[in-house]
Length: 119
Image (cartoon, rainbow, N blue to C red; front, side):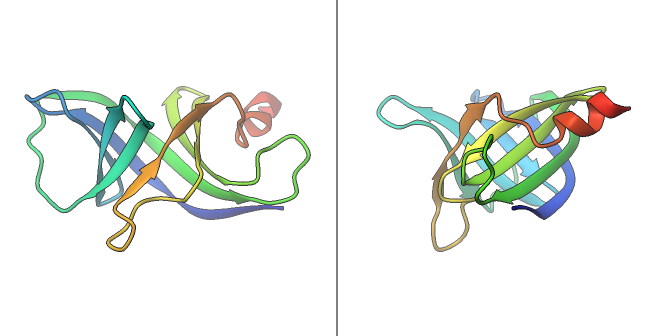
């Protein structure tokens, strides 16, 4: 079963200190790479000054359970261009005030893909 948890507009920026920040609507997450863990999102309540705008578009957050071709986790999909999407797995969901960090794993698995292929 695939459940749409949330959708909206995202923005990915980079600060002067080379920190990437992902905004999902008004929620900010620092996107960093840890040598030991890999890529992680960290909840942020700080205002970040944009040095470089990397990407903007729609996003969709899904919960996936018992689907044959998809991993049973939360899936975050970011629009990368006209009809192009990049998928990410969130093993513990998005970070929040109680759980400040979450892994984010790039994946070729896409939920949106069949919708755009049919158009």
